[in-house]
Every structure is written in structure tokens, then in C-alpha cells.
Length: 363
Image (cartoon, rainbow, N blue to C red; front, side, top):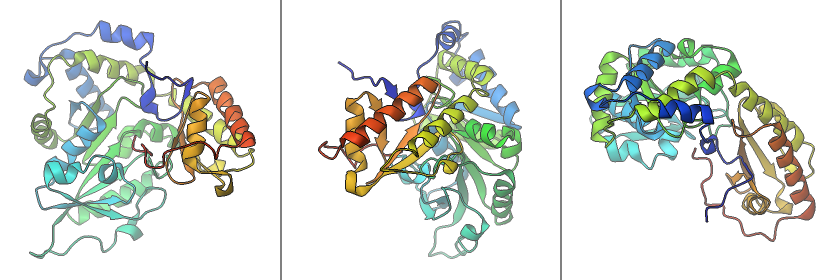
């Protein structure tokens, strides 16, 4: 029997399609996408390219796949990419840059998972036969392990201008890009103006069962389609899944503000509990990171006790946990979570056996 949490805050990947989204899926018009004959996929790709102000887009199976299609598009074996040290592409995609593209990830410590010019100056390798050429800059918006933070437009623009000045291509892992746009108040087109390729995930806050998309120039997306085939991502009647993404884009973007409000409510409430450490002002989007004081136990132990109480929150370090709000979490579920955590802290949890080597914050 499959265990199901009463309140699942492990990730926004836990969202389930709404009845309205299921209806859209059931009504999808389909064809063979490998022949560009699936009208729903074609509509989705055109819709997203237009939203981002780009020339083309290609539907993919997952965020990891679309990210790696971007890496393969911009790099050749022996090249390197630059990325913040907590970046998903470097840490949580199974070594794919090396395995699939022969590309090295050069990780650079930043702030809250983000980079800026002081982090990047001097990081491009010299044109020397002993060194791997630096070819790509990868950013993440919002940041995951970095705390759900979103780039400001001016910061993203100056980084991309720096990269292009030095001959680098730019790729954004925008798994939660619409969260960033809602939080910061800019459009996806404004943010993506200086970006070469952007990957957007549909199966997180947008609530789809699966799917991602890579967006960029016609030339880059043509090359990315070859990568999709190479990586085993050939799609046929994919309109069944693309219809969910179309529905999400038309109905689930503005409501991300509700997830952000619930995350802020969760953070404000957790800050009142003895033994819980966090600054609610650090919460910008739908990710809430908090720590437990070491003398009370560790994060894995608290996670294990919460699971027994029907609350899903993963440990993401010895003392730190991450909670992620999404469309299946309402205000009542948020407040219930707070009361369960309050009870666990009062009762104690150090006698529970919890894993500190589990899923952490990979999604």
C-alpha cells in the first residue's frame, strides 16, 4: 500500500492534476510530435516562445532533460560551464553534463544560490591547450537550495551582458521561473531578454503531471531537438501531456501568489516555535527553509516524526529542513503543519531514526 501524506510539503512536484486539467487532457487533439504533427504540442511551443519573446521552443519530458538539452546545445565535449555551487544542473542531475555532453561544471560560490559580477570576474579560463574552454553560464531562477530566491532584472541583465561580452552563451534553469516573475513583478519576456536558452518545468508549481520546455532561438532549438532525440526523448502523441501545460499556463500562473502567501504564513508561524530557527524575511517565493536547534535533535529525526504525524517535510542538511507550498496546500493545511511541528517540538523527536542522506532538496 502506498503511503500518502495528509499534508505533503516535500516539493511542489507532489501536485496532482485538478479535475479541470484532467478534462483538458482528455480532450487533447494529438498527432505525431516527431513529425511536428501534434497540434497541441505545436500550440504549447508557440505559446511559450511568444510569452518569453523567443523564436522557438521544444517540449521535453522533464526539467533535467530540457536543462541537459540546453547544455548539449551550447557546448562540445571538453568544454566547461560556470554555475553557482548549489545549482541543480551541477548537483542534482546525476552527473549528466559529463555523462551526456562531456562537459565539466565549474562551481562558483554565490549568495542565496545567485551569482553576480564579483563572483564571475576572472573565472573564464585562458585560451590554452592545457585548459578546458569556458563556453556557458548557467543561472537558476528561482534558486532551489539557495532558498527560493529570485533574481532582480538588473542583476540578471548585467550577468548576461558580461557573459556575452566574453563569448559565453547563457542558459537559465527556470524550473520555478513563473514563481520568480510573480514574486518580483516582472514578465518572463523581460527576464529572458538577454538569455539564450531557458528551461521551464510544468510539473512543479504549475501543477502538471509531467513535462518541461526549452526555449530559445530557432538555431538553438533545432540543435536541442537533436539532443532530445539523442537522449531518448522522442515524443509521439505528446499532446496528451502538452494539454495539461497549456491549461496551466492559462490558469495557474497568477495563483502562484497564493503559494507564496502560504509560505510566508508558514515561516511567520514557525518563527514563534521554540527550537525552530529561521528568518521569515528570507522567504520570497514558495520555499521555506528552517533549522532545529542541535540540542533537541537533528533534521532527519524531526522529518521522521512529522511523517508519523502525516506531514511530509524533508531534511536538507544535519539541522535544516525544507517545506515547499503548492496548489494542493491551502491555508488550513499550512496552519495544521505549524501545529503538528509545534507539538513535535514540545514532545521531543530525538528518539526517531531519521535519514540525513535522503532526497535533500533535489526537486
